[in-house]
Image 1 (cartoon, rainbow, N blue to C red):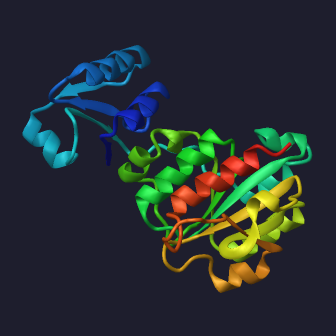
Image 2: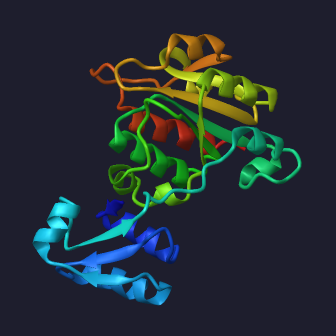
Length: 247
């Protein structure tokens, strides 16, 4: 059982209706919690009153309520092969059907707050797909749901057993691949194709050598300050914003 305690995450999960063992647990209904309770009543999500001590035990850090469910909410897992096959026959959702597509590949990003923030940017800037490894990566957790401000429920995510093979599959589907790394071509000056697969590396280690060698190029964000690099979630947001502006 998973307990969501972030307001945005609870709101989005409640809006999607009952099922998945959902139950809204309420101890101290403030104004925001009352709105969630009203939405739960409309959508048919069961509500149970609990004591604050019990709620603190189940969902530490709650603000008067938590949503219990069998698993953290998320868009249905995407099969990468099927998604690629659907690009040209119109079966793949989003702007990808018009020929343009952006895929974000996350190279073993394990911090749930970074992962959640990246998903939030992916939703805001219309990223078509996020590819993540099945192992050694942040999963669908309350921390991710909270950090994503509800975007976890909407962004298509494709878990894959091998990122290198996933990169090759995307290339077969017409994508050009780029590693985000310092010292590469400035993103603002790069002429990019319609279909871009961007690889973001984990904090500290960056993009792995194997993936970087398989990429068609390296892109970077020009920096004028004194720190060595940007946080990966901030960098991902900048990259996705710049890519979203391109025709």
